[in-house]
Image (cartoon, rainbow, N blue to C red; front, side):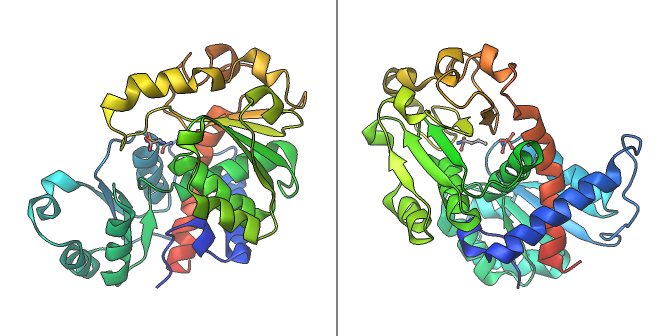
Length: 308
Ligand code: CP
Ligand code: NVA
C-alpha cells in the first residue's frame, strides 16, 4: 500500500518524482480555461474520501478540485458526523471505507489516528495535517520555492515563531531535499528534538537562533505560521502572543534576509500578528502561489499513491 503519511517516511527519489509530476500537471493546465478537466482523466471511476476532523479551506478545496479535474469524485466527511465520532474504532472505519472508496485523505488531531487508519486501510491514505505534521503543505512549498528560485538544495530556510506541525514537515523536507534550517522562536516553542535530529541525520544543518534578526541573515526563505494552531488550547493564546511578538515577520526583519529572499505562510494568517500585511502583500511574498500549488502537488501525490 502506497500511503503518503509524512515526508520523512517517503523515499527522496519518490518525493522528487512527485514534484516533477506536479510541475508537469501544472504546466499541462496552463492556458486551459478555468474549470476545464485535465486532458488525461486518470481518476475516472475513482472515488476519494476526504475526512476532516478540523476546519480547512485550502486542503478541502484543493483536494476536492484536484480529484474532480482528474475525472474522479469525492466524498466530503466530517469526523463528528461519522460513527468515528460516536465510538466506532478507527481500525473498523478504515476497513469499511476501504470497501467503498479508492483513496482516503484525512485531517485529524492525533498522529496515532492517522497511523491506525493507514495500518488498517487497504487503500492509500494521505495525511492532510495532524497535530504533528503537514506534509502536503511542504510539498507545495518546495514546489513553490523551486519555481521561483531553482533547486532548494543547499538553501537557507528560516522558520519563525512556533515550532509546530508545519515547521516539523519543513524539518523533514530539509533532510530529504538537502536544505538547511534555522529556527527562531522562544525556547518553550522549540520544534521536537526528533524532527531536528532527522534533518541532521541526513546531513542538513539545523540551528536554533533566539535573535530573529541574526537568524534571518543570509536567508533564502523566511517562513511564518499562526502563533496558535488548531490543536492548541485557546487559554495559551495571550501568553503565546506575548512570547511570539518579537518574532513577527515585518519589513524590518525581511530587510535582514537576502535581498531576494522569499516569504512563505501556509495560511490561514492572522494579519499583523505573525506577519504584517506589508510583508504578506509585498515583493518577497509567494503566499498565494503556495496555496495554488497545493492543488498541483496533491494531484501528483494522489497519482503516486494510486500508481497512475
Ligand atoms: N494551509 C492549509 O492547510 O490551510 P487549510 O487549513 O485552510 O486547509
Ligand atoms: N499550524 C497550523 C496550520 C494550519 C494549516 C495549525 O495546525 O492550525
